[in-house]
Image (cartoon, rainbow, N blue to C red; front, side, top):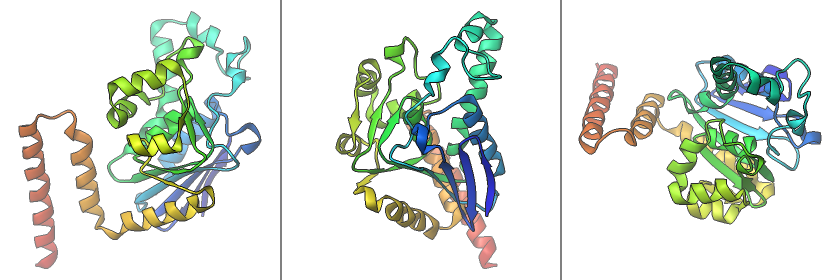
Length: 259
C-alpha cells in the first residue's frame, strides 16, 4: 500500500514493515528542502502497526547529498537561498534549520527500528540520512563522505551525534574534517555498517534483518531500544535503575497476559 509519493520520496507499507524509497536516481537522489519535507511527512504517516522501517534508494547511489542548486545565489524556487537564510535573524535561521532536521529525527523513535539500505555514494546529507537510521546494511560498493566542512559548513542534519557514537570522536573528526570517503569495508570494521553484502544481495539481506527484528515481541524490542538509546546519557547506576524499571514493566505485562 502506497501512502506517499511526492518530491522524490515514496512511502509504502506491507503489514508491519514500512519502506521509504528515494525515487530520483537521475539526480543520484540529491536532497532538497522539498524532499526533507516529504521525508518528515512520511514519518508522520507511518501507521502505528509498523515495527520496522526500511530506507532505500533507487539507482546506483543512495544519495549524493544536497542538490548543488542550493549553492547558487537563487537557490531552489520558492525556498530561501543560503544567502537569504544568512541575512535573516538568529531565530529565523535556527527555525529554518530545525525544520530541515525534522526529516532526520523520527527514524530513531522507540516504537520502530529503522534500517538504511545503502549502495553507492552516501555523501553529506546522504551520509547523515543513513546515520539517522538505527542500523545500516551496505552494498560492497557503498562510499560515505561528509563534505560539509570542505564547503565551509558543518554537518547540521543530526549526523554528528550518531557518528561520534559509532566510530568515536577522533575518527569522526578526521572523517568530517578531511571529507574523505569511507568505503564499505572500513564502514563495517569501524561500526558504521552493521553488515556489508554484495550489491545484488542488498535487498535480501535487509529483508532477512527485518524478519529477525520482527521475531521478538514488540514491547520487548521497544523497551530494549529505549534502554540502549539512553545509556550514553546515564551513569552506570542510572542505567542499572533504568534496566530494573524496564524489566519490571515487562514482567508485569507478561504476568498480566498469563492471568
